[in-house]
Image 1 (tube, helix red, strand yellow):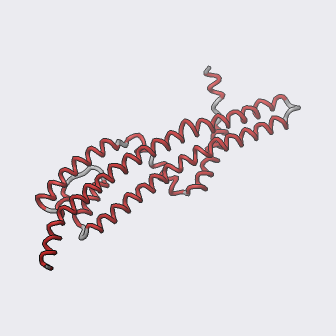
Image 2 (cartoon, rainbow, N blue to C red):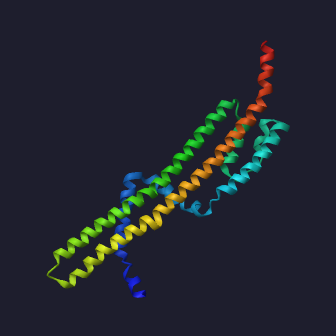
Image 3 (cartoon, one colour):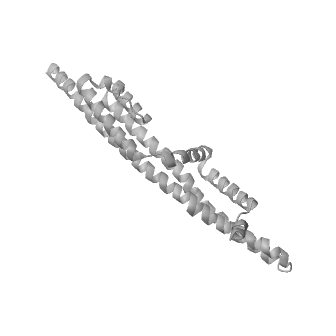
Length: 222
């Protein structure tokens, strides 16, 4: 069994496969997207959107209380662990008009969704490219086999190349790239969901706190 497993690892073939996949992914997505996709591997295992959501809800209760007691300008005093929530509270405290905060929030959510999609698409590109390159390696191996039919000693390496490239393509696509892409999609959906919830709650608070000012302005005009 150990001997069979040892034959499954061919550093040169694997390096050629990985190099080809990297080249295809770079051409499809660009260098910056590939860098973000690699950086996403860290949060892939550490991120906990449900915990972030619960922490954000607790912080929103504090922001709501501070807004009622001291006004919107003091809402940035709430300490938040997540940088998005910290930035949103700062923007809420310093915005002159609600529509300015709403515009920033919509753009920020859209930018985050685009970055998440870019990282996910890189791994989807890997999942697409790996089997294709594996098939290309298989064809090359078969060509080598047919070309060396008169040399039995050359049939083994050519057949090994044909089978190993297929194996590497299947493993890279279905065991690594596709699960990573699916996990990133799940994390993105959950993260964007609680961030949209935060923005909606902040807008409710902002409109409520500005309502007395609008009523006062209407009375003065009247």
